[in-house]
Image 1 (tube, rainbow, N blue to C red):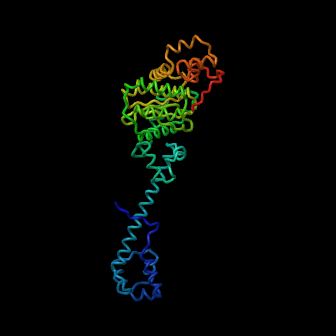
Image 2: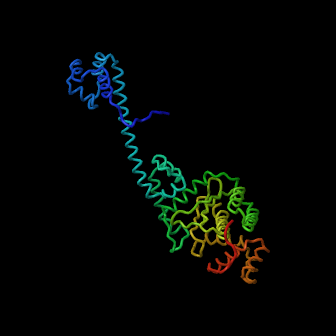
Length: 363
């Protein structure tokens, strides 16, 4: 691999000729007369306006006792340096043009904040291509256009939500890029009952929940990545297939144990019911209210509800008072975090302003 460095400027051999004449205290007019050359021609060589040809190199050899090959090599190097500088400038212009496009199609601000970009065009363009898994800027344009056309139908959204498609795609691409570098155990769908029981225990204890959940899912072959949401990307969860394993992405925009637990089970519903048979699908949930007509989203909701609080336990809950102490007692009896019980009640009633002192924060 070539390690040739491109100089900032190319040095014409005429500059070295001038230095040599100055060192020997020879006037240009006298030297021109000595080698039978017009003074204007010598001046053009010294100023870099005329090349040193083979004939001139021989004259310099005879007059200064500096080999002709030396002057010819200097001239050749000058021409090469000029070509390399020109190429470098062309590449620089091309990078600037590419970056102008990228800034409109990629959440550059967020990538810089997270440390994936360094304000170095060559590095940053490559980083964007790696994150988006593309070879050309044309592929980037196609990806963004596709996202914008699919958002209304593909993503779960409410008319009240403001969604920036560029940020949404950039968020999901970064998550997929990160998941690609995660290593977890082999995924075994037959271990779902064991996974559910251990998740219940983690949520009930509500201690070091994020790390414990990530570790548990990794041991069951599921990648879990936490990634803060970008501007106008009100995402709760994202499920997709990454290499040989399913993956879940969470923003934790709601720092509540009930939301965390519901989102985890919702995305697990997608994994076990939908993604196993169609690994090309992806599910991004922008809202957890009853706004989606998607059968798959409703199935994932039902999966989450029934696995957090079974239908039998939910029926039992209808027979008791819904004050804090009753909910805490119910949770203690069934080893269910009372915040999850309260969250289910709010969800089912579509009323989230229920007065309660039950702590919903995730620890």
